[in-house]
Amino acid sequence: MSREEIIKKFNPTKDNILFILHELQDNNPEHYLAKEDIEICADYLKLPYSYVYSVASFYTMFSLKPRGRNIIRLCSSPPCHLMGAHSLLDYLKKTLKINVGETTKDKIFTLELTSCLGACGVAPAMMINNEMFGNLTPAMVDTILEQRRKER
Image (cartoon, rainbow, N blue to C red; front, side, top):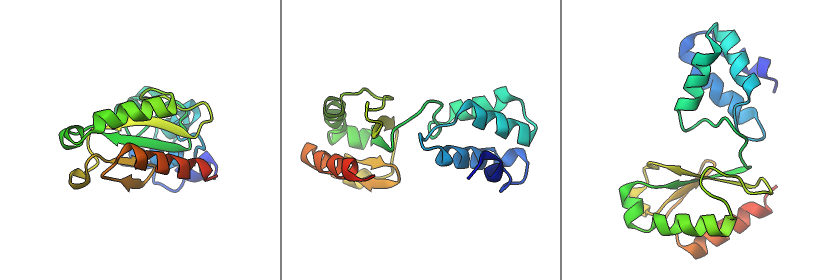
């Protein structure tokens, strides 16, 4: 779907800015908002580029740089931290050979932290794209990552 087709799904009102940005980001194969996405949104809503950019850079759900096919969001809330999320973060960084905010060379994974996934009962937890995983161990993480590597 083109950028023009995406934005025209919404009324050109300021209160649709988040919906438009989400759709534009979801439409991008690299899961981020390109400069052109911000420009078309600003033009359509008759807002300054700087305003749309500030919205996109404020919310952690948006990215302004390319990301991998699978976005790993590891929960860093106190319950997850107490249940071993910090150790899992170290494990993920070592296994994927990237740091938080980086993407693997093969563009399959991007590693991010999130403040809460609302899955305290199954801590430690992470989300990959829209799928939640809980009660994680390094062995479970290995299995999940291997499954994701096989998907195309």
